[in-house]
Length: 197
Length: 255
Image (cartoon, rainbow over all chains, first blue to last red; front, side, top):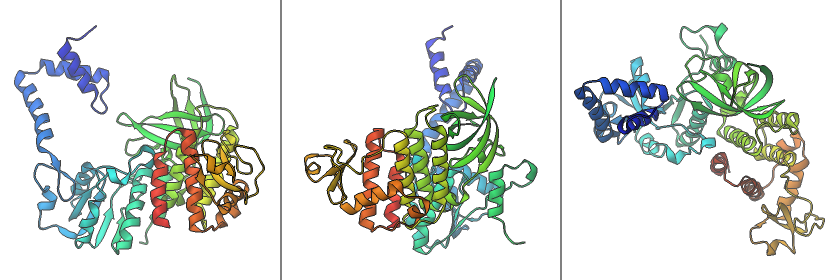
């Protein structure tokens, strides 16, 4: 069974999206085909608008549609605190806590020596002028993975000689978690990051 | 679906789809192989911690059509000290990439010896060493020997003449090792190595753990030995490893 050429092209493009296999791509394509012309146009315009208007914030490398992102434009935030995250979605997760009122720096990835993701491919160089501008503490909020830890240790090794306080968010059991079902690596991490009560 | 248990070291990990991970494992019984960890990328998955690189695990694997699937997983050792220092994590990354690059899938040659060497090297990388590259190079030379790529360090790789360290003056990755005074200048790709560097390589080749952790050569000798082995591995792999470049940049800040 062959699709008409435009339909085949749509299925092929949708298949390239993360987590979308051939069956899902086919289902989405037929769904779009059945939608009114206006709905399909809105979707196409939304995709093009994102590609044309979204860029990296000149200060923190967050995604934004202006020169500076919303966080960097906010004058009420504490500029002495800088939280380093890997991706914009990590920044959003931190913002949802409502607890953090400092600034951010988005690396746009994590170091992975084995996959050739080196410091020059990330927004690491851009971090140092920011730190020199009155930052007192850098909080490393990176995933507790080999890549996250490599990045955290790399940044700490370069920031600490500058006399900056460098901290890392705790790793361990999740809120509401059950110790019985935690894996050993998480429990080991929780033990290492324990604190006095 | 038949299943089997094995002990393994997680060498590499990559995400597959939204929630799965494909691991490169070094197993005790079956050598290097790939396995799928279903759902390991999901938050709260019991497989997520055990599927991190530099972790020693005990696995129950189901035989799949192309890739085996991890059914159960238990951490034997997570090498926590490796994750506390950029030099240690860079060397562990290099070691795991070297194992993944040099070994062939399901090659049953000396699997137990390779597994024990790989695990012992990670143990040693957690220990304090005067020159942290010495334990790494010790394991590297032993792995090259097991896989049949060991460099010649006691003879001239061209004329075969037995060399005392005073006679040696070059090292050629392409020709397989040290060169004598006569042949070193004739080989365009040869690296110039002092007698002290060659003596150090010979020591590292046979030294035990405590010696490897206490060797303290001068910085110039360290740099030359690092370069010789790096070029040797690059020549035999036919490519430069990403973790080798990263380790080199870290060494620059340690000096």
